[in-house]
Structure formats: structure tokens, C-alpha cells
Image 1 (cartoon, rainbow, N blue to C red):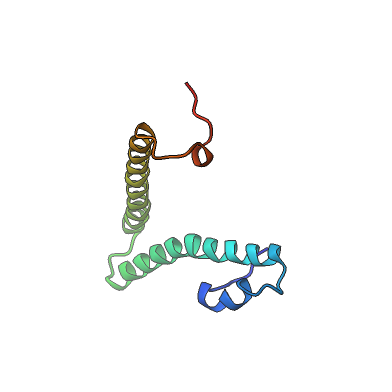
Image 2: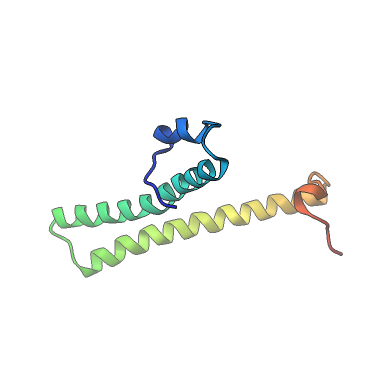
Length: 107
């Protein structure tokens, strides 16, 4: 199911109990995917448009913009994932995480 939605505009539908739960959940998920998928594409296209305006547009500029966007995303994602893993390990050692949340521990 794909429906272009904005979270603020879709809130009355997503919170309305007369709308079937499956439809509300689908719209809610699609709204999040819309932002998560479209924003990077728009940023890359804006970067390319700025390069064209500066008359420095070319294959090298396009490759640099795409590499920067993907590289920054990967670096931030890796840093956050690594930090979360370290925090989770520290919490597990201190028994701050319940088995209901993490599942049964092995070994």
C-alpha cells in the first residue's frame, strides 16, 4: 500500500479508531518510509542542482555529492550502532536489561 502522506496531515486518519487497524498501521509505516527514502534523494538532487548553478557540475561533482551523502549516512549509522552495542553490553553486564526485552541469554 502506497499513499503519499505527511505525518501531520495523516494524524486524524491514523488516530481514528473507526479506520481499520491494518489500514492505520499501513499508513503510519508508509509515512515513515516516505521520509526515510525521499529525504536523502531530495538532498542529493539539491546538491546536484547547486553544483549546476555554480557551473561546476560534472561527473566528478555528482560522484562527490553522492559519496558524501552515502558516506555521511554510513559513518553516522556505524557510530550510532557501535555506541548502542557498547551501551547494550554494559547494560547486560549490570543486569539492567530484562530477559523479556532481549530474549533468553546464551552461554
